[in-house]
Image (cartoon, rainbow, N blue to C red; front, side, top):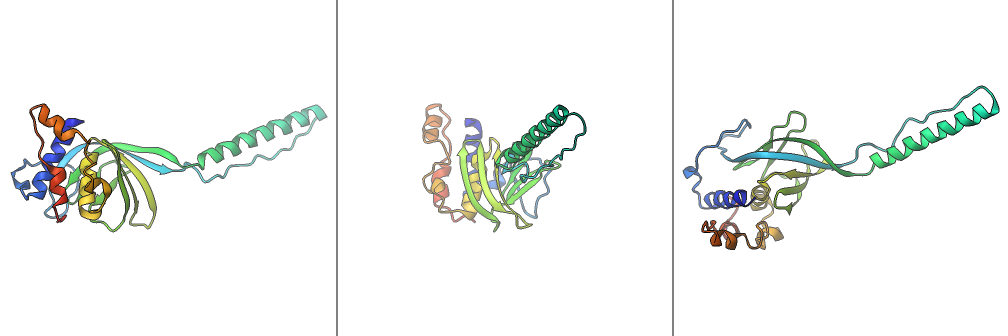
Length: 214
């Protein structure tokens, strides 16, 4: 994880200082806008906070012909079946984190793009759809947003580039975010640890505070 964080600081420092042209070009299958440039590519898993059902279920009716004992046993079995379906429907209606899929993540100057064939996801850093963002772990970016269809969603992106994604969104759309101002999008001892290992990282956290986000 430290290697990704070190490169995150290097990328952000070049971005803020206007030196991206010195970086090597990175290949990606993502469709980019005019003038956009890929900053990083890596694995990513999308997880959504949602229910698996709406609480509905098929109620099985009961009609049995036979001896009283048979009829009672049949009614009891039907009641048990309906109870099981009702309980399962209730459990499915409770929101939980659901894995949507794993794919390659492309992070560019303008946004982030996921190439999953059925759960594709794309964000532009300056989109009006952002509602909340957070970095819930060094490798987990979380956001709530309103998509182009007007639907409100909360998702997590599990990727070693999570800190880079968070920093780029915060720079463009949440410049007063506590994690950005408090520099806590990096582990508290990361810069010191890099220095002790003889591979100092560039002061991206400080540079981001003095950047206008353009």
